[in-house]
Image (cartoon, rainbow, N blue to C red):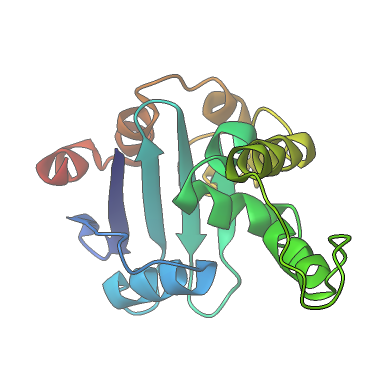
Length: 180
């Protein structure tokens, strides 16, 4: 189960809104959601959390590239939205490489001969390959909130109530709680 919210900075403080990630398939989609919530292209923070397993922050400001922080890259990579972020942080989508190899028809069969594939074996192989390339622990911009009142050290020390603690440090705990 995911929780996702947007915090947009305004002249009067922070405005929070919950958001659905159903249509988010890329970082660009997530950035577009943030831009829609932005007031005068000011800072927007996207909070994503999956059942206390991991959380992520995406910071969008104007036309700058989004800044990303993921609390546990290995855990996030095993989920659909976390995978979008970890792929961005690690410099590419591993699935694209797999698709390229599959298109080369290197499965050992003759032309026209159907390949026999054990779905369970293939699924286990994909999982272990993905986990191999993703480091456990935090990934991304550890100073993503430094200018907003939360140091790198504080960010790295966060536990299971991370989003609440972040919102509290930003002075946005009450507005975040309204959408939680």
